Length: 230
Ligand SMILES: [Zn+2]
Image 1 (cartoon, rainbow, N blue to C red):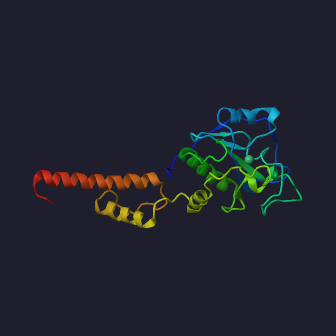
Image 2 (cartoon, protein in one colour; image 1 turned 180 degrees about the vertical axis):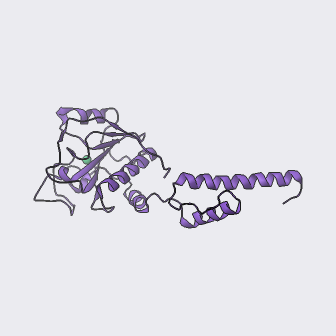
Image 3 (tube, rainbow, N blue to C red; image 1 turned 135 degrees about the vertical axis):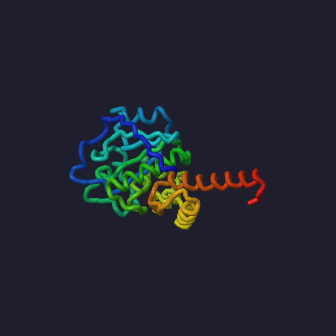
C-alpha cells in the first residue's frame, strides 16, 4: 500500500433508480466489463443499455463513478440460481442493497497492479463508509447472484485471496517489529526524540527508515575518508 489517495471522476449514468426504496448497501458486488475502454463506460452511460454500476476501475487504475452510492445502479438485478446467503428473496432485486464495481477487462483477465491497488482502495472507502463487514458474504462476485448467465463475472483472474488478505490487514503494511526497530534506531541516531505514532502513514515510516540508512552511509563514508575505520 503506497498510501496514495485516488481521485474518482464523476460521469453520471442515466441508468439508475433514485434512492434505494428504503434499503441501504450491505454488500459490494465485483464485476468485469468484458470490454475495454473507452467502450465500456459509454455502454453504461447509454440509456439504451439499461445497465450501469456505481464504479468502474480502468486497467490504468483510473476510477469513474457512474451512480451515487445512495442510488440504485442496474448491475445485478437478474437473479438466477444464487449462491449468496444475504440474498433476500422477499425483496428480489439485489441492486437495492448492493454497491457494484465494474473492472475494465476481457473474460478471464486478471487485474493490472494499478487496477488492483485502486480496487483495494475503493473497497476500503466503501467498507468504511457503509460499515460493510469484510467477509465472503458481504464482498462478492456477480456470479454469486447469477450463477447461470454470469459464471465468469468477475472471472477466474479476480484476486479474491489477495483482496481479503489486504482488507483484513487494513492499512498496516509494515510489521510491528520493524516499526519498533525503526523508532529505536531513529532515537539512537537523534532523528526523533519521542516515540512515533504507530498508526502514522506508511510514507512517514519510509522516510524515517531512509533517513537512518542515509545517516549510516554518510557516517561510513566520513569514517573511511578520515581513515579512522570506524
Ligand atoms: Zn457482472
